[in-house]
Image (tube, rainbow, N blue to C red; front, top):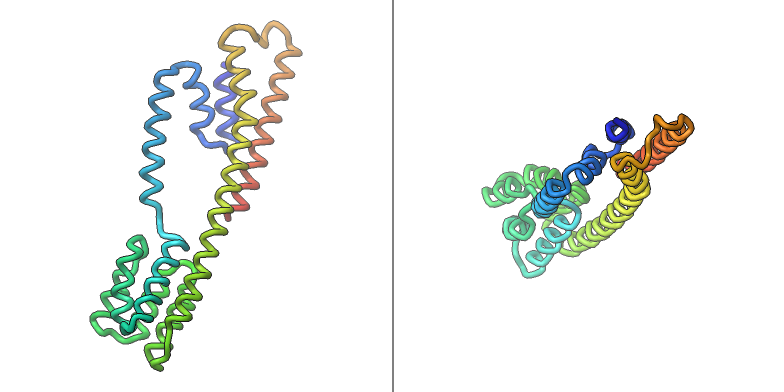
Length: 223
C-alpha cells in the first residue's frame, strides 16, 4: 500500500512516470526491470541518432555553402550542393527551387524557413547577393560561426539541466528505494507506531516538494 502511495506521489509531483514505476519494478521483478532498462537504452540511442536538426546542422550547411561560393560556384548551384551536407535540415524545397530557376525571393524565403538560428539573416544575404551580384561567402561563414556558438551553448545548457535532473532523481530516489525496501522486507510498519507513520508521511511530502521544485526550475531553464 505504501509503495503505491510513493508511486502516486512521484507521478503527481511531476516526475517522469517511469521513475516511481521503475523503483517498484526493481523490487518486485528485478529480471523484468533489467530487460526494460536494456530496451530503454537501445531505444534512447536510436532516438538520439534520429534527432531533429539543430544549430550544428545549420553550421555545417552554412560552412558548406560558403566553401562552394568561395570555390566559384553560383548561388543557386552552391545552395543545391550544400544541401547534401546537412540532411536533417529541410532544405530540399529550397534546393529544388534554386535549381528550377524560381525567383530569388521565393528561394530566399524557403531557405530562411529551413534554418532554425540564422534563417532571416541567411535569407537576406542570399537574396541580396542574388540581386546585386555581391559576394556572400564571408557572410555565410560568419553565420556558420554564430550557429556553431549557438550549438555549443545549447549543448552546455542541456548538460547542466541533465545534471540537475539526475541529481534530483538520485536525491529523491535513494530514500524512496530505502523506504520501499524496508516496507517490503517487513522491517518498517507504520501501523505499529503512529509516530513512525507521521514521520514517513512528512518525509515523502518533503521529497515530493523538492523534486517538484527542481522539475519546475529545469522546465523554466529549458523554455
